[in-house]
Amino acid sequence: MSSRSKVLYTGFTDDLETRVFTHKKKLLSGFTARYNITRLMYYEDFPDAESALDRERQIKGWLRVKKIALIESVNPQWNDLSEGWFDE
Image 1 (cartoon, rainbow, N blue to C red):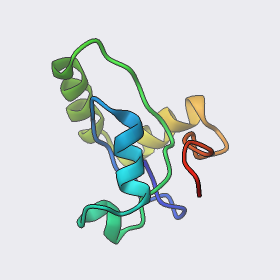
Image 2 (image 1 turned 90 degrees about the vertical axis):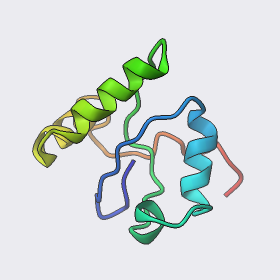
Image 3 (image 1 turned 180 degrees about the vertical axis):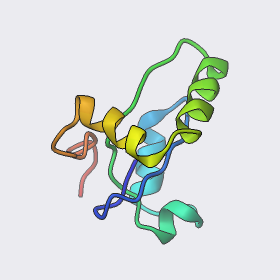
Image 4 (image 1 turned 120 degrees about the vertical axis):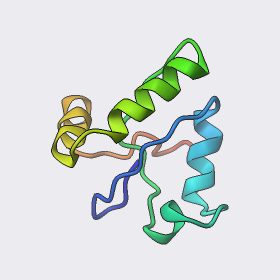
């Protein structure tokens, strides 16, 4: 996920829609609320939580430039992939 100014956040969840809603509505305090991280830029599906957590750790270990390349490989315009999911 990212802010409009492209501050990045990487996380994993077993319920993407609920997690995105939580970030958009800033229901939890912390990094994402503080930096207004409300836009879904990229996501992957995994068969189990362990695989997802391994991938999260891998991506978090990357330099910013590599994270941006991953996002832009599927979302070059940085569109919010969750646009239209919720009543805005």
